Length: 425
Image 1 (tube, rainbow, N blue to C red):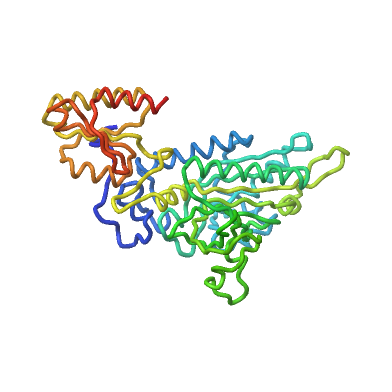
Image 2: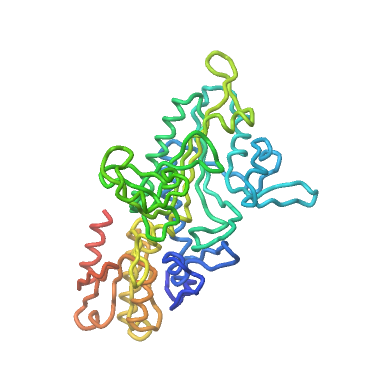
């Protein structure tokens, strides 16, 4: 991709409405633009990152044995009334009417639809366990959308739903999904905690949240300084108790003391038990030939929120520092004098072609701007590696390799290709 052709409207300063780092940098780097309160368009750079996160989530879900489907965002009132959530969800559920005056909603979640599909199409325990997932747009009419993508009204989410014959089988699926989410977060390169949580409007027997640790996190979690124990402080605090009173107390698991941290909830997994299956009369014939109500689990991970969380954990005063696994481009070729020097232009284009053939995602900065402007833009958008072709190339056939971490080295183009070939293999 040539920088001069890329739709990348960078900003020197973030709009005043942007409060947190991820919102500021996503606007400044030209990743997103606001359409309405809590609703954003993903521009090319942002979409490249979003798709990389989506690919990681999909790969790990497929590896877990889950099957992908695609369900409608628009859902009929009748299904939601079966679970009594049409009214229970309150104003977060955006209700609409079609031209025939029939009631629908924009789906914030899909328990009703998937349960309806399974009850109509799965009749025997021999088909179980099943774990069905989708990656799809959701809508929740938040009372106060804020923090950009982190707390928007429209967002991209991976939601999955498991169907099991008994509680033991549900527990097995639940643990598989727990490990799957850990793999997703580790592949992206995020520091996180798994905490016990309140099941909220989804309901069910128990649930856990996956929190990416970040200063701007909306949730407050209590963690042990000596074990993996973590819990949302909502579950620890007694009526009227202040969060500060928890700091330094003995950890409930008996290991170490409590520390208070901020976290961004990026995932939530639930053991629903028979909650939805009973209300929607979803059952299969068991091994004895009798009807057996299904046990269910549901598992959500915020695909778009993961992008914001990654920025909250990986940035400096210059801009974003993308983890390699989700960077929009692997390499940026900063060509100084591209429009004036034929040798520099040829070397830049040749290197771009060869690196692309090595399956690197490459951006070639062919703009007329000087080194300072080009480097600032590259640092802002967070490309892991820059190759500068300019004065040193014309003088002694050398180019500069500059990492986003600030490391600099001078090499010939052939040496750089050899180094990059080594890392690729």
